[in-house]
Length: 171
Figure 1 (cartoon, rainbow, N blue to C red):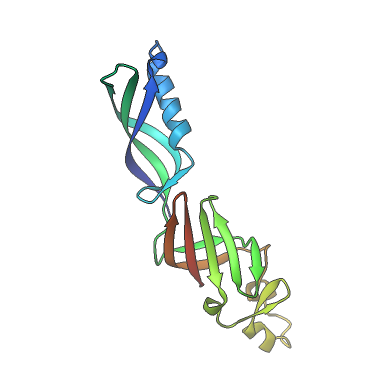
Figure 2 (figure 1 turned 60 degrees about the vertical axis):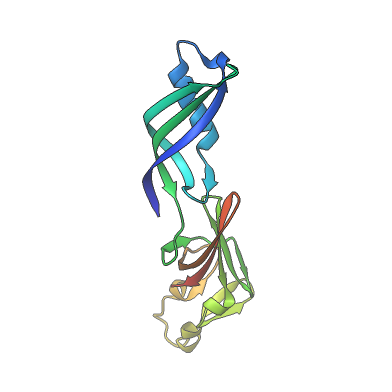
C-alpha cells in the first residue's frame, strides 16, 4: 500500500523568508504543511523525501511569494481489492474497527465476517467450536481479539475531507 509518488504542490510565503537559507526554509515549510496530510488524489503523504523542482512567482502586490514544488513522497492510498493487516481497536457484534496511519479507518461489518461468532469481546471461528475436542488446534488462528492482527480486503472506500473510510471483508 505504501508507494513513492511524484507530487506537485504550492506554498505561499511572505518576503521575510528571503535570506541566505531560503531553500532550506522552503523545504522545511513544505514538509510542515504537507507531511502527514491526506487528500483524495494523493492519499496520505507520509514523508517528503526529495525535491525535484522548485519554482517561484512573486505576487502582483509584491507581498507574497508563491512556490511550486515537485517532490518525491512516500504515500499511502487505499484501493479496492487491496489486502491489508491491522490490529483491531474495537470489536463489537456489529463488526470490527481499526485504523492505519491515523487517517484510514477500517470497518469489517458482521455480514462480512461469515463463519465467525461474536463472543463477548472477540470473534471465534465456527471451525474452532467444531474442533474443540482436538487438543492440537491453534486457537490463535481461530480467534479475533484486540491483541492479534486481522487480514482484510478493502471492499469499498469513501474519502471524507481529511481521511479515508474503508469497508472491508475478512480474508
